[in-house]
Image 1 (tube, helix red, strand yellow):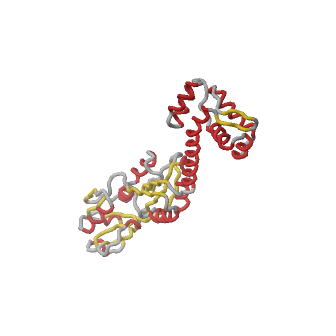
Image 2: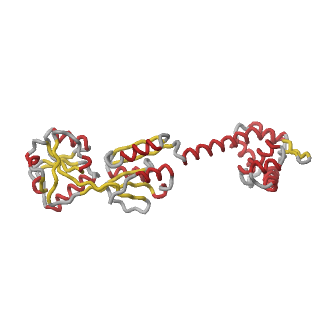
Image 3: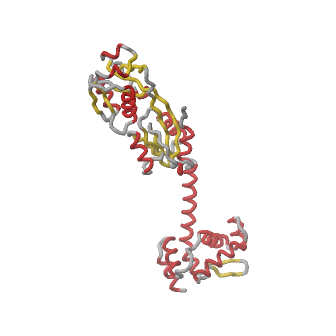
Length: 317
């Protein structure tokens, strides 16, 4: 008995106490938090009756938990004096560590409540661009200022991969994925238009056919971009082979390339940059639409951090 008590004295934290107590009997279960809470309540209140009232349980429950705790490890935590209870030496040694445990439990409870009420936390959003999701991010940020938001921009495939890798909580992508592990919602349907420099020969037309693009240099996004895929699919379906293509890896670079007269590009309407030297042309004879989808892992959909964002996100189609 003395050896166990001395071991407890040398232990600096609750988890060390658990290790020491478990050494006393390898076949015994780890001390239950509920038993330690009963021990703490009785030590503070002085009687089982008052402790049971404080914990909101019956007196036999508290008595039983104390007996289990003592008998499991062969230690005496209290001296019984009539209806009163006085801590033994072992109980006095254990008390400061159990008090820290109770304080930690309270802190954990506060933290979990804060997280549930969205008073703190982190939400990472991966998007193919700011055009379809940024208003939702703005409103979420206003509603839950305690949440740290991070928005990452990439192409459709990379955002979906980041979602599967748990590197983000929310993804927007133009790829339509049928995956039982993913929750999906369409948030935008955006017609694609031809964008040229205002001095380009096509700019004066206002409307063009895909066949009209054959003799002009076409600027394409990198592989993995849905805009590129829709462009190539539409040209192939129309039997159009363009004279030349240039691969440029970002929207901003394509915009600058058009302004420099390097070529023309097909861009979703909401992604077309506003600039006096750019012209946006409707396409005759082809209905090319970029659909944008919002995704999260279905298993994480009920998480408050994610669920509240989904509630704010738009729905289209």
